[in-house]
Image 1 (cartoon, rainbow, N blue to C red):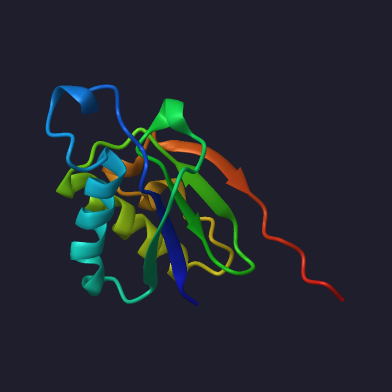
Image 2: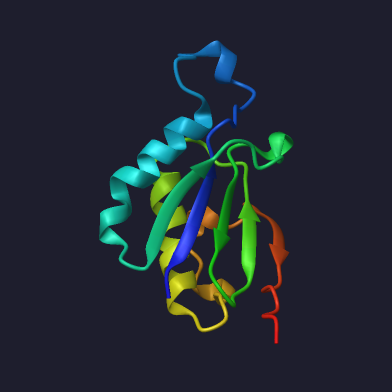
Length: 124
């Protein structure tokens, strides 16, 4: 089952206005994730304007049907962050319930979890 990474395309970190403002930090992170995703067969990426976690920019959501979902933030728009996000999402896609054991988390993902959400219940 595929795991979706939704990347906030409007996120701006505190230092955004000091540098090149042609792209938001979220757009930069999304571009980096997208450029690496072909090596991660269990992952689909998409962007969304504002995940409403402005105090935690750059934000992403990790989701899959019938699995735990997660919101992560405080990423820098770097290749290392993008790779860690994809590594975690791939593990999420391979896990039956989406709960990846902490010992398996990529080091660069630790400390970035903001919330988790239980799977939506199917209508009977």
